Image 1 (tube, helix red, strand yellow):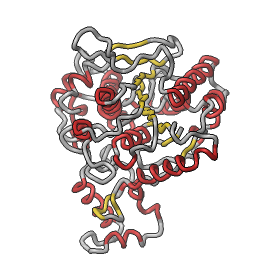
Image 2: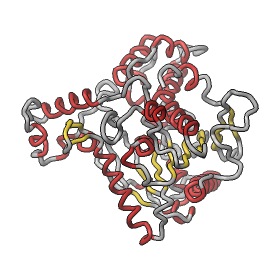
Image 3: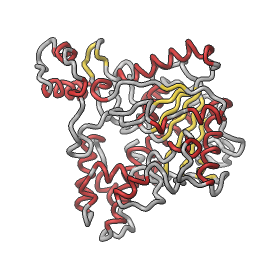
Image 4: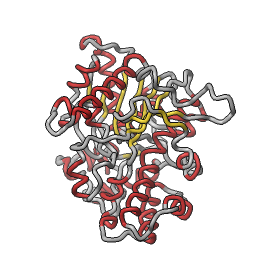
Length: 424
């Protein structure tokens, strides 16, 4: 199992305590490998040049993955049963490898915890022209002449990598990093790649999201949400800022949908509505639509999906909940990490017996998938091919210790399948 960490493609490390793979390796009887990759401008600056092709952080991951294939046997692994798995930007990276012609044949299975590169079906979040403009702006900030033929060499002569770090985010998304589409690593929009059959579809996929993917993200990216009120006008202003990065959002229709039956005088209710919107746009619909489209185009339809509906009482996000004034029951983006890596077993202080047992259960599910291509016998495939009518039925596992076999039918019909249908 080859782990790719998250961090918005701008930070992260395999040496973070929460990514200790020893418990998962022992519990699941699997070999865990993780590799650092370049992040930020050093990992994703695009230079329109063979020496700076963009997405080099993804190339780093691929180089490490190839090393694992070449050396798996020496570590008791099987080069033909490699599962790549990642969370957030790591999950986005996993989806990029599923799409990339350069990664074809390098892995057998993929696990995506909250994230994919599938966004606007009409245009990339960032294309090569915009990426080059952004890179030259960075060069100018660092004292290099972006119009000089040797501007990339000027950047390479900068010895302090900290200078490449972006300043604190000013408008929520201005410094966000996304893989560049239209490059050798990612030649096509995901939707176009599926349409043309240019996807590595001979693999199995397990993917999923949490119940409240966008709440903490919305509150941290947009400080104005932390005031004593959050008005409809502020709501739409935030959406307009988001549109600058995500492009072509139907702000009026989206606002109408997410504020329907919401008490717009309640700051709590408005924050929850914004969190739902951000979660669907950033994480839920990209992950779900990628999994569903893959299942519709794969050879064996071996795709499974979950929604995490439980969070440990004293979870890793407890300080965040306190700082943001959130209810402890909010299942944040990233709430699955501590169960995936067995933190309640590794550091049991503060965790309940239920947390301990649930983490064991989650690790068993994902290691089963890595070894056998199926989490357990009670988990149906995402697409129900036994449906008697022409309507596509999607089935996902509600991942909670309170009901270990709960299945939800068509959970995202009104969101990803309706209000966001025009976009994804």
